[in-house]
Length: 65
Image 1 (cartoon, rainbow, N blue to C red):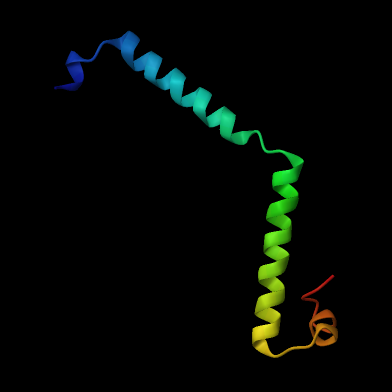
Image 2 (cartoon, one colour):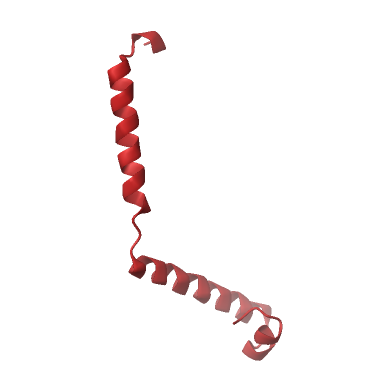
């Protein structure tokens, strides 16, 4: 199939359907945001623990707020 055999209306329809899918992915709930923040914090605390730092040392270094 060559690019010249594709109908312009078909291409427009495909492009429109992609835009609709992209917009639906952008709707993020506050619960999802909070869950993502919690996961990041847990990962950060795991890394601090693995490095051997105490929580006080991590705060002094500015790793925890």
